[in-house]
Length: 444
Image (cartoon, rainbow, N blue to C red; front, side, top):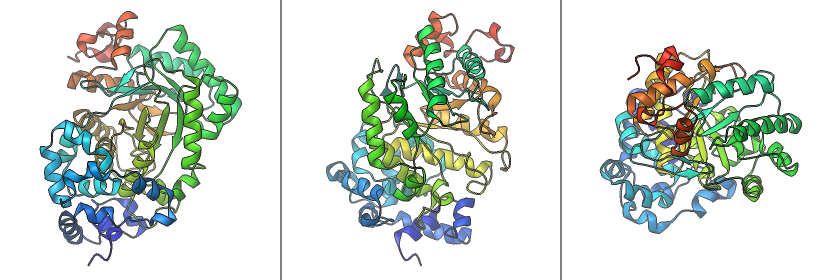
């Protein structure tokens, strides 16, 4: 009924519009259930021995298999996918850390397909990943935020205004990261210098980033611009990475260049990656593999470079790939689970496009579920409306809500800075005083 692993993984995937568009989704709920039963009985070792994209055809497959650690895999090597699910739910956090080098993204994607949302949350909440540059990200009881002060024409004054607005509302400990409207060296250097001036003037223990293409950032480094992090969008196949204009060798060159600057104070994790279900299909680079499995393979690329930050822009690519709030919610929790289980500092852009069947209530639900699941960081955009990228995300106040509701704080160094500046109240989860924002009154 399912002739190969690639077909079985695709048919077992929970319904999403991207797999339907690719013509690989299950034709009915009954076929999907049958595939999930078959997948639950499949040995993990069989997944290791049947890469969905051949070794000789794809450098991501070679990265995955060449880096696999049989010793770390040994505790679960005799398990089926179904037994692996039971193991994950019962395992202690230390056991999950030890397991990471022995897991391939296909194994992690496979087990996620037979898990309920509560399973994805319960296991991810046990997976803690800590990274460092100018502060410490990912500690228990913490939720970091990327402050995203995008501007439609990259006006430095507009970017600076949004940055200060976000800082006053406790955002920015993950990174102050701008998506540039114009990807040029000159424009990128201008924004980098402005952001670094703000960071230096107020002695903010965080990192800044202009999310230009990696080749642009390399040229900025050559000009001695103040580059903290190297950003790049990545995918789970060699072909999709080629469509982004990158290769593993180029990413390694960029990592070396950024680390040579030695700008970190508590660590030198310098890479920042974004991913998203559907990018391979949109580039016709998916090789017939379902979009969630391809997404998990992107995390193997990220893992190879010890990144400070990784996030899925889960609803950004559009309803062609994730049709509605239900699909976006499921995908966001899958992405977070898979990334954390593979050892990544996983964040999620809780977002949707204006033509998706989703709204801010869906995002409130996903944001809360991710907070319970221990998400490393989320995005904060002024008013939750990105005026440059034209999509809906989460706002500065949304992060304050989830921190207050779940008793979470910013990164410790950033939390101390907020208190020192008279902005934050660490005892209240790093919130600014109620009097500074009427929207916060009543948040206990």
